[in-house]
Image (cartoon, rainbow, N blue to C red; front, side):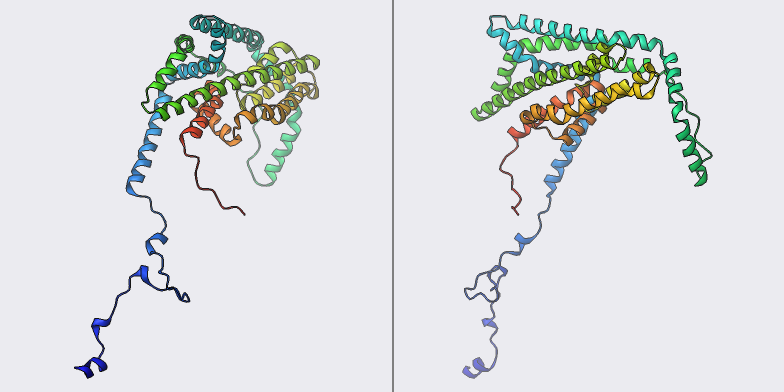
Length: 384
C-alpha cells in the first residue's frame, strides 16, 4: 500500500483553484486575481430599456398634444410665463398697500398700453406699404436689374460646363401669400381673451398658487427644494424680462436714429419694429435686416444708399449680440448658444413666432429644474 501511494498519482490530491484565488505571476504575496465579471462592460438591462422607451413615448405624446392643442396651450403657457415675469412688480405694488388683484389689473393694462403703442407705430407704415405692394414690387424689380450681368455670366458658365440651358428670368414673388400668412400667425379673439384672463388671474393668485404647490409635498426637504425652485424661476424670469426689454428698447432707439440719419421713411415705425423683433433671438435681427434692405432699395435711387441703414443696423446688432447682451445677460443666466438655437428652432416649429418668443424663458426654466433636480456629484473626467 505504501509503494502504491508513492508510485501512483493520487487523484484525491488534485485541488481545483477558483478564478478569484489564482496567483498573479511575479507576486510573492499571492494576491488573487480580480473577479472576471467586474471587467465586463456594462450592459443595459431590460428594465432600463423599457424605462427609456416609455420616456421617449411620453415625450412624443406630450409634443403631439402641444402641437394639436396649440389654440389652448399657447395662450395658457404664454400667460404663465409672462405672469411669472410680472409677479415681482405685483409684489412691489402689494408692499405699497395696493391689493394684489388691483395690482394685477394695473400691470396688465399698463403692459397692454405699451404694446398697443408699439403696434400702432408699426401698423401705420405696414398698412401703407401693403396697399402699395404691386408698385413697390415693380420698383424693386427695376433696382435689381443691376444683377442681370452676373446672372448672365453664371448662365454662360452653366452652358459651358454642360448644365441647363440657362436660368429663368428673374420674377418678383407674388404677394397673395401675405394675407393668409398674417391670418395664420395672428391669434384669434378667443385666444386673446383666454390669454388676458389667465394672465390677470395668474398674477392675482400666484402667491396662493405657489403655496399650494409647496404644500403638495409632505417631506420638509422636498418643500424646501420646491420653494427654492419657484423663487429662482420668478427672480430669473423677472430679471430676464427687465434686462431684455431695456436692451431691445436701446436697439430700437439706435435703429430709429440710424433710419432718421440715413433718410429712411418712417424711422419711428422702423425703430419700434426693430425693438419688437429683437425679442425673438436670431430670427428677429435677421428679419429686421432684410426689411431694412428691401425698404432701402425701394426708397433710395441707388443700391449703395439703400443699403446704408441695413449695414448700420447690422453693426448695431453685432455690438449688441457680441458685447452688450453677453456682458449683462450671460453672467446671470449663462445660456449656451447651441441650447438657445435648438430651443428656438423647436418652439418656433411647434408654436410659430410666439413659440420663438417663449424659447429663451422656457430654456431658463428647464435649466433651473436641471440644476435643482438632477444630482450634481456626477463623475468627472480625469485631468490632463
